[in-house]
Image (cartoon, rainbow, N blue to C red; front, side, top):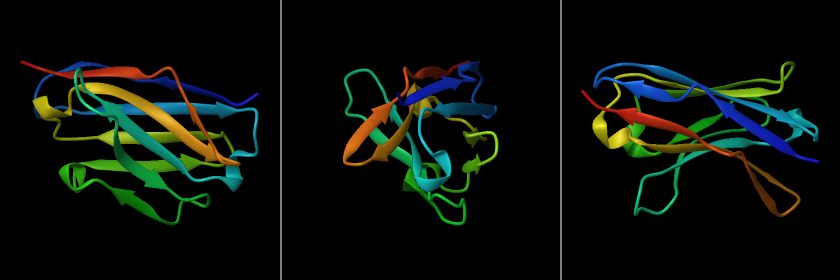
Amino acid sequence: QVQLVESGGGLVQPGGSLRLSCAASGFTFSMYGMSWYRQAPGEERELVASIDSTGGSQDYVDSVKGRFTISRDNVKNTVTLQMNSLKPEDTAKYYCNCKRLGTDYWGQGTQVTVSS
């Protein structure tokens, strides 16, 4: 079965950095695009960044462009979100996502809190 397991969240001061990782299993990882979403309390889940199956194309929501970088390793079956210059408004639970055969798969999420 498809499993997505996120790690790397935590508490960081404004201007700091965090690196989120998502370990994928149960499917042919190299065939599918992957995404990171986030959801703050009382807000809808928001697409943050996406990467295609080869890693050759990435897309970002405007609010994180120039600060976040999504990448993947098709040997280790991982997708990573490097987050720099973090702001308090980046505080949210971050989720790894794969859309496969018409179904959305999600990890359990990892909390990112940006606060002084």
